[in-house]
Image 1 (cartoon, rainbow, N blue to C red):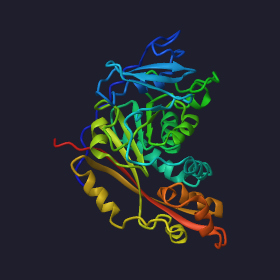
Image 2: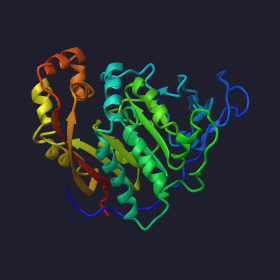
Image 3: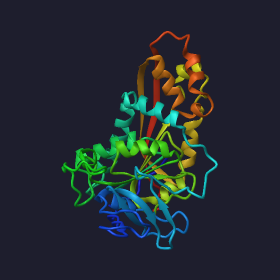
Image 4: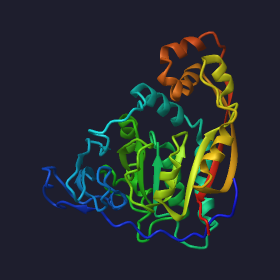
Length: 359
């Protein structure tokens, strides 16, 4: 990886979403009301995944998005939690994580085992913007492959604590217990956030962890449903890396933060359960893939020693790709002869990159 990063410029604030009707019923018959500012700003980042038009409108239901429409008339309803499935009628050849896999991930991450990785991701974002003369901090964030929102929550919380927020955004409000407007949302009032994932189940959990984010069911390998230069930060943590699309949706001064497993990541657990090993050439492949799209700002290796009970070890295996091939009961059976605790190391690299420029 090479070269100096390009000069940075702050992103213009996203236009707010236009609501069909702020006080009555939207044109699709849904009850509406004013969206919280972060969600309205997030809608303003979008482009229609069918025709590419910007200027999407949103209905509101109980302070969540009730549906999205584009100027050409394409429309998607949200579920009760505000998750919008943009793949309706389009489909994907990839398989989303199952409810049991999502539950395993939620338990494992909720226990704090990967907290040092989340902290490193948040630090990478903060450091990248602290290095710039231009302030304020990032105005918009995309988490591609967000899952349950664990890493997005860490980034938005760190940005709010550092004062890195969208101009005019409130950072200290509390009060309403409506979804998306209570204390959990207040600590995230700042950057607009869009979270995409293939799993509607994971995104339903994300709405509780990060109520200020706009959750969209989407396939990262397709053209992302955002306008050009829409966001200042893209996160891809243990997730697919559509680098041309990440470069398209990032501002010139924006930041991509990738997290990739190193060889040896959860190595003992892999040997015990039959999980696939990390490709020893993975880092070289990442370096080759980013060439022509991004330049490197920083890389940080994070090594987290873990002492796990048998149930936690099973969750660590089942929550990842192994969960698509091995059932929870089979993984538990493979660990049944192991004397706890299970000592393993999580080993990852946090990459910070900026869009490449020929200048």
